[in-house]
Image (cartoon, rainbow, N blue to C red):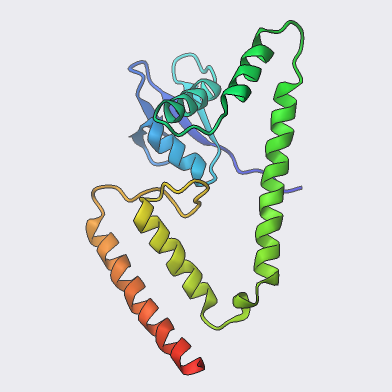
Length: 185
């Protein structure tokens, strides 16, 4: 078994501001959501008491996404969750949900491995370049907010020059790839 990396530590100050201890700056719930989409685990603790607030903030992130119309959880599932909290005794729902998500993650990983291994396109010269360009294009088009996207968070407002350079590089690489494909035909 591989060791999981330590979670990103976020400290909540008395003012309720959230502080990223890794980068030494303040973050928002949207930033934390981005860290999680990028595959990072986070831990949010109260600076004064040391209480772990991670669950509270993750639920708040989910509630905000649901309230904006990003409905991921069907009403029936939400009803079942409420019932599991209100029912007497220990509920099997948390263990079931955890096992279900682990199976989903494992299944997605295996599908991606199989697609990569079985796809004849992966052996084509320049495939990695084309794949990287496609990911960069999707990131640029969606601001990095595509569900399941692991290519990173959306660029901040202070990075327009870097984004323009990236786009120019992508265009150049695409032209090179098209030239190579033309030669293969």
